[in-house]
Length: 550
Image (tube, rainbow, N blue to C red; front, side, top):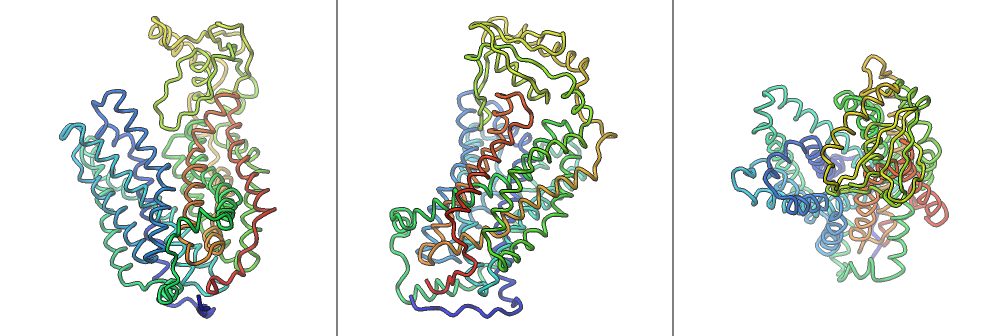
């Protein structure tokens, strides 16, 4: 392909601002919808999964999970290929249409009581379509913006796309809060929950209108005029070792670590506050929101800085800081969010005495598995109560026992004939023993140091901005124009959809296995450490790559 002259490094033009804005709207959609499903999961479950038998519920849960995480890489393959064959503009116009229409239809979809089994089936189809569309959206946005950016400003320009998670979060929170405030709880649960999904049609209309006015990427246009677009982008991307090697380096030396730092800094931090430290959800959400407001500027800052000193040092520094400081940061969050729990953990640790062969690794990503051995029941109950414990092996066949101080609480076999009776006794005895030992049922609002927690959470968000701000520009610069959309989309969505998406359930399983409420952090530390080593040793710096020359 003939060399295309890069746009001059001048102040951002009106067209360039329009490119960034239009491209970012799609990722705003992604996060707006993501938070809607998360925030309204309980209501949606009642509306669409009531009356489904256990087997059908398992299938639906599995498919819903797949739509959220597992199918994103497949969407990356499908739409990445189209983007390299047809063009960036039209492909990610299609992805936003699929996303927007799917979100809107959820708002008008009749529930289970109205159309029966068709309701959850249609919901799952919509989620699958949306998951596929999401797989193509980010790669298109990143590629399109980077290919319009002047040389030396790609990090700065693409970093604006990275800020959209925060915008989507706040939009969803504001719309849901407005609906809950205007309606009674009964009205919201019956029909008011649909409003946030219906509102998305406004986002869609604005985004499509703006995107229709945009021009195709100048690099792709030139390549298409010369007849040099890829005829088989999948084969060129993944069937040839030269490029496949770069795809694997992008995944293991870039996006995997970026993903776990991203999920830890926002989603796992929220999970830790609410589930482990027992901070009420409204307070926890406000604390996370405050840290996001303070820290979000870091996306643009580190994107801009990556144009000056390089993408690699900033991303690797973020991974290194995460590895070195996650344990002290999360212990400090415990100290300032629930000091009573910290004291109880130090003075009254529990012991689980159980047959090791009965103890499972409780990895349950779709929320449908049932852990019924006495060991699993004991450990799961302690983890959910934020109680650290040590493991003591018992003879084979022994029913697990929890010991807290001098108090012994027998667990039970969840499949036994008397499971219901013993379960009731266990459920009553454990909280009483924990209360006696000083474990709080929830965090005392008066003891929460809001300022210090926001400071600590902001540090976590800054790590997120370090790894995420420059990543889009780096991925674009790693691959040639003819297969760029395809090549960068797959490692991004495997990293974020799988490595990041599995983080909460993996961390919980590690905590349940070890008895240490902080041990779940070993998962993001291990993945970030892997990325740090591989990225440092094998990734080349890309900031000076001339993407207009390939």
